[in-house]
Length: 262
Length: 258
Image 1 (cartoon, rainbow over the protein chains, first blue to last red):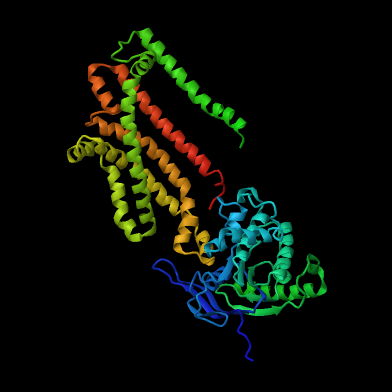
Image 2 (cartoon, rainbow over the protein chains, first blue to last red):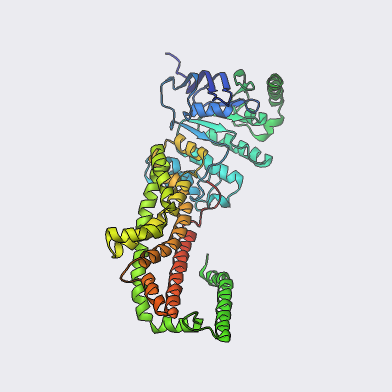
């Protein structure tokens, strides 16, 4: 029996923004290769400005790559826009909608019946720590809660593949830590193929099955680490010997890239 | 919010304006009497008030004529303004071809157009409705164009990754984001529409407050002119307050940026 193609395969993707008379062309990505298998969690880590967000824009179908291919379930010609969930660093909640209204947005867009959509959201509210906040508006919520609403909106849409662009980057360290632990629990229950972009080494190692390291701009994938620690991983994992060893290796790889970039 | 808290806060909000107005009226009354200014030159507020009460029927008749022109013209301006704004915001071609003329239309003095309209469509209601519409569609177009473009690019990207169509992005993101802008435009439009109606009536009409002022002034019936002005000002303030109330109600949850 032939092996199933990975859920997502990015092969030799490059991106160059054409210059104009006044602006130099910008070579952002220079050969990115990575795979995300079904229900696998892959983290992508690299120095800032290495084109991580551009890569997510390409994978999600918002932008076109200059060369190379992105295949979804083995199909490089598949239309990706709308088939891959994408959660940004900013929560992007609609201020005029309450928590419930924001959560069901994806289902609404997909044409799911209103009562049905609300029922599905209602069932997930406790998991997302939002029970009782259905009628609250984003302005009255904390940053951590807003981010959980955004994740609920992303998960509810039901796309099997999720891109996360530094989802907890704007939060304070304590909130970030508890949300990472919580997210790893949620993903254990609601399996998704996940590609996380981050510059937080702990976050990558706490959440991912594999961590890809990118070079500085123009970004390429340089090396990959398998994180052979049982998931989900509680915060205590941060000080386990295996975690510390992996973290050292990962930091070394990153330092090499940062050095090269500088 | 509970009702009990609404009333006193409204009183607090309006108290300074009311106090200033009363002080102004009192000063006016005292000065006119003290300096013995003739009635036909500048009547005291008490005479204007007497005129308003004494000619209530007459004023009401003409107020109704003017109000109809304002409301019809404003409705036309709203419909045309919003449609133009949507066309301009969503089509580069429309923007390039239409927008310059929308702006140019505001540089043409209405006072020069109004007599021509009279010739073209006659001295009836239509010419005033057109003047009102011409003067009040502009703030609506400009604000709604800005509003439709105010939704941020990442927000649009988020909708696209959810699989939203262009129409859905308009209905669920850009249109609600434009609502505060629309209401700002409507507030300005409501006030200028009053001016439009008066200009329209001034150059030729068979009735309305503008017409009443125009026929009263040469007869030195100055109190009546001021009575008409007072009613017009009240209409303007009232329209503004109504739109303001709609705004507060519609935008009660619009906190934070899109």
